[in-house]
Length: 98
Image 1: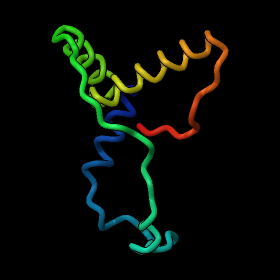
Image 2: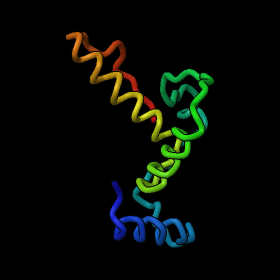
Image 3: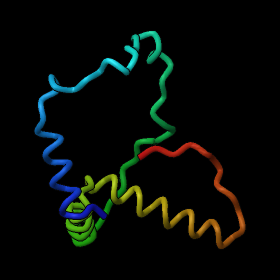
Image 4: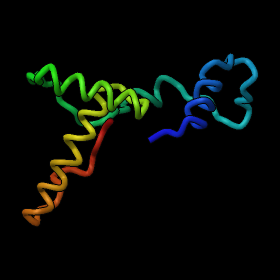
């Protein structure tokens, strides 16, 4: 959970223009280097969620400074990992994307 101080710091950073940033110690990347980049193994799905649950998720996500879909995905992941641990099984994949 983000503290109020951290939220203010992030807000101030987001408001800063890019010009004062010193990129001199960061090597440039080329399109060729990014060509094979993969963000993570995710699948797009559609599920029905009650309006009440969605309202709660939106409220809690906002309190944590997260988009509600990211928050729901995080909750789902945590729940599945915990449930899977009860069965003594390990994760099926080491890749995870949020």
